[in-house]
Image (cartoon, rainbow, N blue to C red; front, side, top):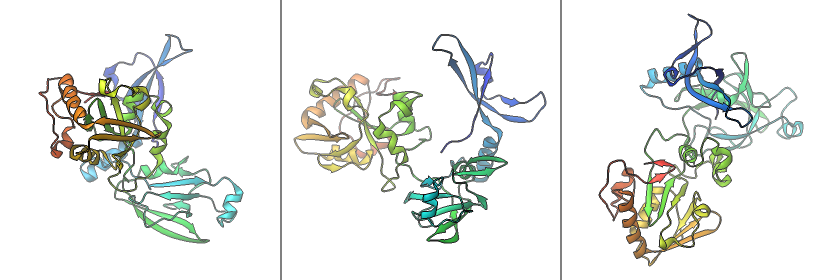
Length: 355
């Protein structure tokens, strides 16, 4: 979901101004806090204009209220649904809506989110906390027509929302206790260091929005593989399901014939014929494997096959070259990896950034 921000043109913005309050006039109320400065190019030339991004005061107030209530930031809640807007008259008629009724229709529900068990696919959400939901999914919020998802995100985790829904032609009200539903591709990772697994010259990682931003830059939504970005809207089939990707493919002799530009950033579907549910499971599968070959099936019907014995030696070489102690990240070290190397300060395997 998107949160509102303010973008302003500015001159002479220095890094010292980051975190400074924005006021309409000296001594006036705080409108927000400067969080980022951006240099916008004009006509693709060197000249440009300075812009600043501002976190608005209502967003900061919501954050502070949450911290004061829970002792820490619990995130922004969501209903955990996929929905369709209802501008089409035929669709509204099909759903049994009267000419005066407006809303959005629920298409799918996150099985581990707040709406599971309360909403059903086909429900029409007419009102949220008594506020009418328009056919374009907007809601009146402080005199402005904003997306209903924004209204939900401004509530606190653990609070309840009252939804008036049209179900099988009858209006009824349901109450939902808000939470932050698990996402197949997490939006945030809580500043945790990236998780990884090294096998020969291959580096596997969990896919997340920070990973995509690191690998593909600020315009990652348009430059990342479509098969990954479409998963941003999918719900997990189990609480621990993750999207595991091949983050790096180093040019080792045992990987001759596998073009890094072709196989990198592909989702890992199966290992030796067994489905890969998450990165921790893949680590267990690889470390317990006693077969002669390691077979990784990737999205797009791509397959990488390695000799297990050769892969073990190549992994040791990779760790020594990059001066990494273990073939797995520290959060997976309890799985007792096989190869180790002495680390050197400032070293790390590159996953877009350094880890």
